[in-house]
Image (cartoon, rainbow, N blue to C red; front, side, top):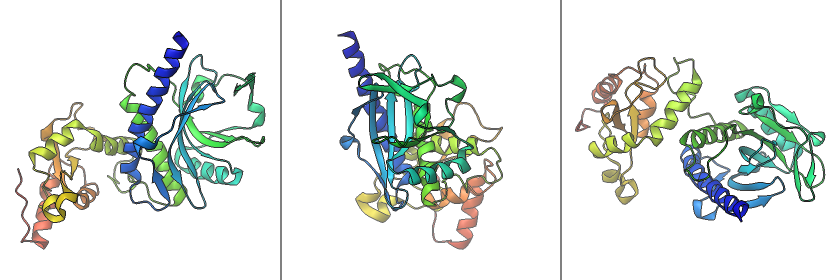
Length: 311
């Protein structure tokens, strides 16, 4: 009975993680041709042969067709289930193409083949040897060719999961960034962080910055305070697009989190409400506090009839 309760709790936890990831992925991959992120109410958590469960959160079509999946299982023999996030396909050549795209982003991967796993029960399989801790967080390419076996490219999360708590935000952000960057590389679309703060060499910090700009509660408060009006060009999405634009805008960190001057705790005053166009232009600037005002002057010189209210 105790194991049944734990299994049910962990299954529910995986579904919660998948829902949160799908929402985040939809924001990252919106508009990309050949990519479909599933709505939360359609996510199906399925039992697997790895003593756990798996769930598809998105599908890619075309030459790189496959699925983006989350697994929560005992495959790595870690004395407890671990989260795995990956691209999956039944096609060996597509798996190799994805792995090649991933290697350009994340470096060389660990390659597992048929001799890496074994049966540990009549209906369960796992790695023949436990995955060493040093190999967690590193990409793994699984190129199995036994009949019925899938091919995967993904990463195992090293931390044990407390299924009674909400999925950690850091985990959702990590999964989202990994899967979205991998997808963009696979279909030839640029990463959303490619043009952001090009003078900052630490691209990992820039990627974390972009994720936090979308997920911060302070960002919502900032947008409410500014009435969802761009503080550079003055655009108001609901006024322009009607109901479609209701409560829509983006929030910009005046000092990027990648900067050594960034504060540990972000307040509403550290943010500015902007539209997507102005946001991209701000990310091409220096990352100084006054960039919003400088960009506003540039815009006003060219479009003098537009005036933001600057709440």
